[in-house]
Length: 280
Image (cartoon, rainbow, N blue to C red; front, top):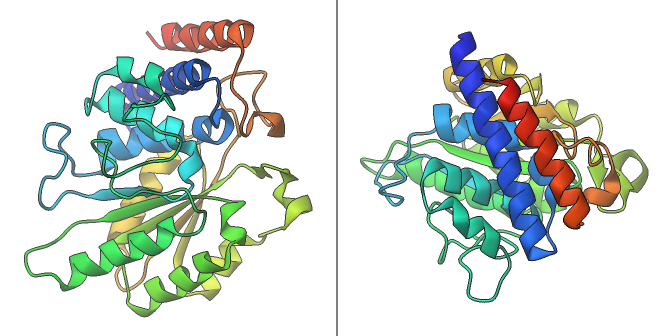
């Protein structure tokens, strides 16, 4: 990846992280940790990978993203706002009564949201349905992406969907497993270990790629490789840092579902704005 393009994506990801902090602070609730860990992924998907049009969210033939770990909606909302689906100012209404931005994604109210998610494990099943529809519907040719948490894949429905995707040879489906090693109750190794994740997806018939979630060269290589694979779905297992970009949130399970207070809000914004300035 060219340096200028990488810097652009790093800036976008930092702005998404700022939006996550903005939203969760004004909501006084939400899930910043796992939202921050997928900011780089969202930046690449919405600015480089997916065929989309913010001015026409229901465009025929558009690629789809299903946020299976729906509690990290603040990340998705920040990406959609930054990409132009709605004003960035909307982020301050997160979880407020009457807002289009509720605690989990709602496809009926929020432009750019392809599937209402929140019950963990179900998003990947919906993504499988979309990918199969693209395969069997005349005139349809789009790709489907879904982001899952590493705690989420403890759900049995995930593996039913994995079996389905391989059986129907859904090579237009990419599942991104955000492996930050932390879920609401602690490290996944202590709660209910899903390791080895790569071996499990391979055993279910998937093409598997392991990457650093915060390295845009590796992100780009993974998505390009996924496009070349025929006859099987791809799982990108990305090793990430929960709370990435905010020093006091990084690798801290307490930030799974806690909003920053006023002092923490200012510190987080200062750190992210400094990171943004350093990219100029």
